[in-house]
Image (tube, rainbow, N blue to C red; front, side):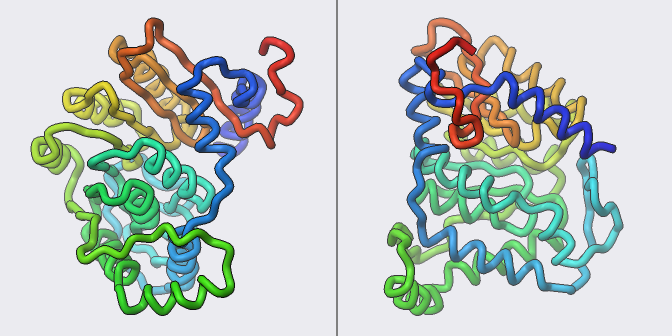
Length: 301
């Protein structure tokens, strides 16, 4: 039933969504171009998806402590890694957009709330390189798997061999910059305990991906806490804003906050900005042109 509701929410979003051809703001047009029209492929895409395939085949059971709104698929206390990979990870297309957002923002630091198995953190870290990524995870067993995945991904000897092979057989760009250290720090514990400490450590937030608790009240609390460390160029991304009516209410409150000058609804996530250049508050429901090819901006929408 919940999936039907999400489908109905998407239909309403689709009807009101605009493509880049309906946008007059140069800043938002540039973002739309970066997200929807940049078709370049990067090594991280193939590397991370190889890792995803490995995780989708791991039958190992691990204990799961879910402090959020739970899963639509499986709420058991113990789950297999493959089950978590199938239901909890951001999709490949969403991860590629995260990479492009991070690459476009060029942040000095990145905060992620909701590590899961670490796939989205890898995309963020590579897109924002050489920025440091701090990712928060409530379940110790899941955090341990994520650390193993980061160690695998940043193993230099393994990667050099992979790069030699793909350089000959793939059209991917050689964007990956070898790291001497892993640029991702995993912090374990409940968000209400770990977030204040991490925010104090970071002092300011350049880019944050909030994907850990799909309930309105905690989401709004995280927003207020991050807001105290935001600056003019900060970008906050909220995942699954149409996951439930509760999350839609949270998103509505966030985008209407007086300090938010620009908000963008991509359906799978919402982005808020604090740019002082914006004279009036703006909001855009944005969809890729290929999904709405008839919307070319000839008529007002």
